[in-house]
Image 1 (cartoon, one colour):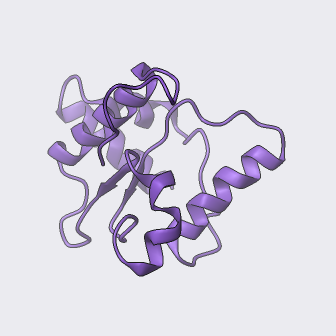
Image 2 (cartoon, rainbow, N blue to C red):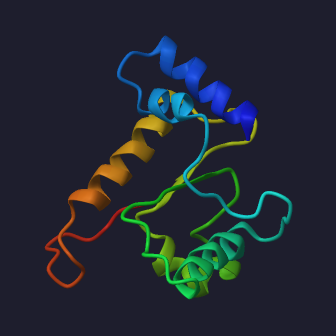
Length: 127
């Protein structure tokens, strides 16, 4: 995790206005899935959300998954697809996080934070 944060800070410092700079400067992620248990990413993330709810924590006001694993398409992802729509930026493992994908992640967070409560939204969420 320290290496990821260092890269966020390095990238943010080289690209003024990047949303990654603040995250890198914070020196920590607000919250993460289990860093020592690996399985199906969609399941790990859904479990993280469920654990927060079960412990009485409020649902995150906004969240985004930046991952090179598929989180929306295919049979394995179908049962939780609705939970993930509007929260996923998929990278390619051989390329990693690009400036365009970082901006897409920031846009998803902005959209989530500015969206009206469910049921009052006039436009569908995008992924």
